[in-house]
Figure 1 (cartoon, rainbow, N blue to C red):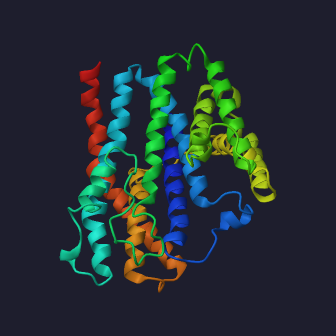
Figure 2: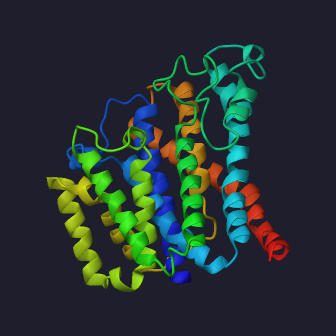
Length: 348
């Protein structure tokens, strides 16, 4: 288990870096397509791939966590302590530190920044406090930005992530992970088929709410990881099989057809690939990198504008996001994860 966990820690950091790369092109105002988008002929980009794989890995690990916990309250407390403390601190830092720095970097006065008014910094925290992003920015903060839609666009995926946790809890309570695994597989296959139809055809099929939701690919990816965990004895190829699947995936990405099977295929390939080796990482900076990178990139753009070469912008974004991820991990995430041992005793 340690071997797989260490490999997965590395995978999470690589996924966060992929998201940073894609967002750098967007937030930095560079008129460039990321290499994966070009290679795949528009099928997928680094950010979408990174988030989809993260959800697939999450489905695999969270399903395993539910089976290990043996207690729904312990499972729920672990998920809440892992997500919310880091998220809440990130909201505060983005609203009351990074945003004012962005504001004054455009020549405006610190005193003119709206900390407490309608649509201001405090309201940004209040509106987004429970994961669902209802306020995307702070008043006129991004009027001079290359990307003006969001102060921290990465945070939107945390709400679907929590929805997936709730689904895992419900599925576990109804015995779908033990007594009714094939019913769970059937439900997952229906979701995969629904995803493939709506992603690959211009006409929408099925409930409009789900069809239009950008989270559909994330739900499908999460289910793919969960199914791979439940049926790991049947779908875990050896090294040669994993490398063959990797080659097959690259062929689909390059020549078409990838999105027909993307949630399950990328989950199967990468989950198995990163279980083949051990790579010890003491500090898991991936979550912090992911949630802090977007506002950090907005700040970098407002300080430097388009003066930085794209590689310099990406390098700086990765560097400062990794530092933020490290500080988030040692000051916020790890202390609350350690707190889980005490809460477990109370909930047993």
